[in-house]
Image 1 (cartoon, rainbow, N blue to C red):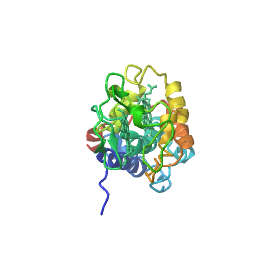
Image 2: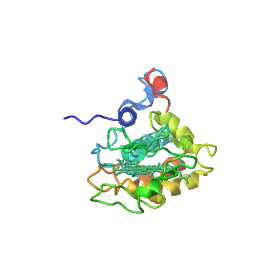
Image 3: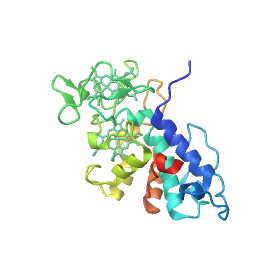
Image 4: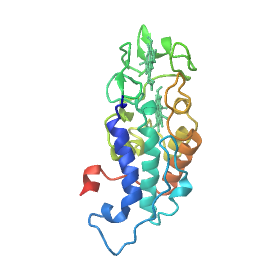
Length: 226
Ligand code: HEC
Ligand code: HEC
């Protein structure tokens, strides 16, 4: 059986591939014979994450920043993350974004509804045999932080926007990426679930490097494809 892929996850993978392979010329609208192609990024397994140093070969700072975000988005669009950043009122489960079973609702504070709170089942750590994932303060990302079915460009813009990211500065976003315990769960999901690629440490380093290079966002795919 072939596992069904997340459309957004393949979009993120395609984005990395296009940035790695196609060079800036495509992004600038017209192929330019004058500009030498950027050296390709090192190959990486699906379960691994490139280090920020792998992007040093991209001379243009903005292009490097966009490529760093594209690499970080391989984590962001992983089911372990998107399942808890849905666009509607229900968390998702497993690798194909199944609806949460049993049905649950986000409720007024993203923590469930009376009698069906997230923490009535989700503890502060994984419960292996019952397959219940857990981490401290388990609850849904607010709707403003929804990633499900959104493009990397859209998610990049909202992550930077204090009106939609919970009032965070870029430094606080980097800190959240590197240290938050719900983010950490993505690499220790328990019960045989596939972890996000790489490690939280490397993800944090990529987000920090993206910010250091100006936190540039990828273009919408529609535009990039022109
Ligand atoms: C159990 C649910 C849950 C999981 C799993 C989860 N998140 Fe979140 N995420 C949240 C909540 C809740 C917030 C809001 C926290 C706040 O504002 O303090 C959030 C906010 C964020 C933010 C802040 C900015 C924004 O605009 O979204 C980032 C970045 C983030 N999460 C990254 C991740 C990554 C990467 C993963 C996977 C490795 C992940 N999250 C997995 C619940 C989750
Ligand atoms: C009645 C118990 C129960 C309640 C209430 C509950 N969950 Fe779950 N949840 C589970 C179980 C059990 C699983 C594991 C399903 C599996 O993988 O087999 C799960 C899985 C998940 C997953 C998927 C992890 C993954 O990537 O596969 C997320 C995200 C999640 N729950 C979030 C929430 C949130 C947010 C709430 C509150 C709005 C909540 N849950 C309320 C029992 C519950």
